[in-house]
Image (cartoon, rainbow, N blue to C red; front, side, top):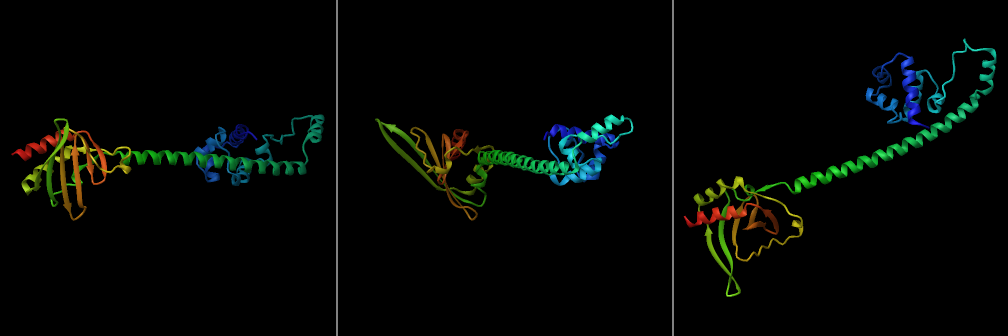
Amino acid sequence: MDTKTIGKIIAQKRKEKHMTQEVLAQKLSVTAKTISHWENGYTLPDISMLIPLSNTLGISVYELLSGELENRDMTNITVSQADNYEQNAPSESDKRDKELEMTVQYAENNMRELKHRIRNISCYILLISIIMIALVYFFPLSLNKHIVQDSEMSIAVTEFKMVYGEPVIDTTDYGKVNNPFKEKIISMLDKYRYYRMPGTLFSDGTIDHINEDLITFTVYSNEIGYEIINITSGRIAINNKTYYFPNSQDFIENILKLLDE
């Protein structure tokens, strides 16, 4: 059973009936694109469409599936040709048996095609889901949602340095900041973005960079509760998650300037 052959028969009989693809589509309650796909052999008609399609085209289901059109015009053939046609033509019983066999095979082909489409659709859905998750997961995040106007905020600066070969941690705790200072921080947050990193789900949020400043914000708001935000060069840790912060050094320098004022 060849899809191209079935498609050619559909196109041939449609044209003989002087029907466009749109007209045939209307008669069968399908789209013209569906008719086009049938005729080009891209897809097969659904098994439920075999009888309506055959009746509309004026052929039998046997002719449609077998690709063997009967010669219904007997006016221009000789007696011997007619006798030969009668002898070689399959009987009605043979046609019915063959038609049943082809219909079963046709149904099996449709089922295989349906399974193939389902697999393809499943693959597309999986691919789209992966892309959507990746887009959402790695979408740039903003500090605006953590430090807001009505939040309470304290700040500390920790310097990690080496003294005579030994690590020294020097921390200055500025305590709770006043509203003017907080407003200055909030006003500059729009231009800073941080990004999720692979392994973020398993990060413990720790940052330990020697010879670099570490800014720690302790923020409290009614919406999010307490959050500990640690920022150092290239990294930001919020509670127990670590993220990539490409402009962190610029952010730290601006904060240090504000603290020196």
